[in-house]
Length: 92
Image (cartoon, rainbow, N blue to C red; front, side, top):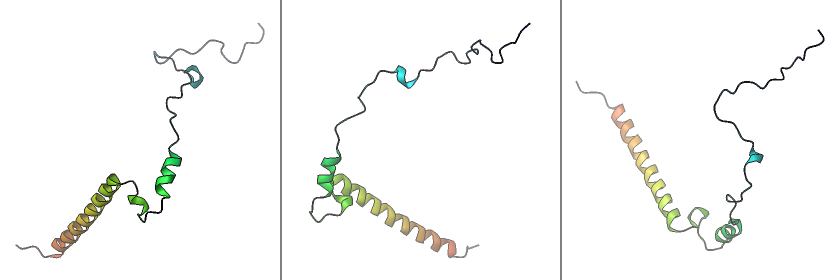
């Protein structure tokens, strides 16, 4: 009779139809690597031109800043109006 192996030597049945691949099976590509932009951005942001950091990159930054300020002021006004209307007694 002898000893039987504790672990089955058969491979388990495949649950899904596709097989998985290890990361080492894929070809090594450097397509996700690009030119290092940090030195260029450091030149832009460290320039002493008197502008705040959040406006250093020009028109897109100004547009985002002004949109954010407009939404903040509009939201504050809306909240104050809603609080005023909620504090008034209802007319029957």
